[in-house]
Image (cartoon, rainbow, N blue to C red):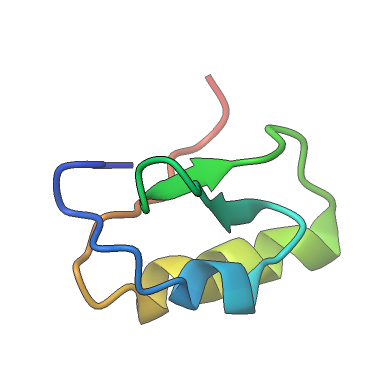
Length: 62
């Protein structure tokens, strides 16, 4: 996630509401959980694809 690119459009929240939110303080995306199940993983992939600022990315397990 590149917070410098985030403009708070909230497309990620629409795609994966249990994973992302927008901070009331900064107007930028925040991650609510690091644990993903199959359903939320699909939403995260959609969120990455739908981010107009390309602020999100997906990395494999470390």
